[in-house]
Each structure stands twice: as C-alpha cells, then as structure tokens.
Length: 177
Image 1 (cartoon, one colour):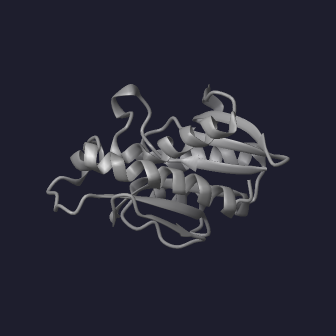
Image 2: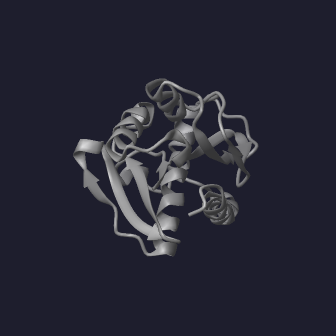
C-alpha cells in the first residue's frame, strides 16, 4: 500500500490557491487513474480517495486540517493504514523554488513550510519523502501568508499545469504506483 498526502487548506475559498498545489496534484492523480472521489473521513482528519494501480492499493489524502496542523492528519492516516514511512509521500508548495519547478527528496528538514514542519514534528522524524512544487514567481513579497493564499496569475498557471503533470509522473516512478 502507498499513501500520498497532498498538503493544502480545506474549503472552497482555498481552491486553486498557491498553497493548495498539493491538493491539485492529488486531483490529477485521482482523475488520471480513475480512483474514487474524495470522501470525508473525520477519524482520519482527511478527505480520502482510494484506488488500485499496477496491482497495489494507493490512498490519496487531503488533510481536513489547516496547513499548520497537517501532521495530525498524516499521523492519523499512517496509524490507521499501518504503513511504514517509506510507503508515504508528502506533496506541497514551496516558495523557495521558482514557479513550476519540482524537487524530490527522501528526507530532510521542513524548511520554511509550516505544513511540512507539522508533519515532521508530529511524525517525529525528518525521514519523510517529499515532493515540492515551486510557487515563487520571482517577485519579493512582504506578506508571505497573503501570497501563498493567493491564486496563480494566468502566466504562472501555465507553468504550474506541466509541473503538476511532472509531479504525477515523479510520484508514479518514486512510489512505483
């Protein structure tokens, strides 16, 4: 079994914001592989979509917590499904990368991302696979919170679409799903 957790904020007001790129990647996986629609699982503090790809069960997870409490959902899902960390990956936006760039790491610090900080803290380890998708359009921002909660410009969205597709391919190859 493989678990992919996409970080984002729940609620319609956050759809397609920069901070919800993780959710966008999971939506693309669900669509491409014909997985079930996402359904609320309050015990797991998440919306879950399940499917089978290449003979293996895959669980897609959108935490129903806000970003800075993402680790609560990650731990609930990991515990419920009884998976090792090697079978789990977290996908999220990264202000430290240019728009549309993706970067995969097997482990490491959470950097400046509060959602990943929560996952590392609550899971109790930096040994968490992660795939980051750049959202920085090259302009210095004074209010990072407003920036990440804002929507992509048309130009930036044209860079994000192929990055989402690249992220899906990377997840497929990395987790062998």
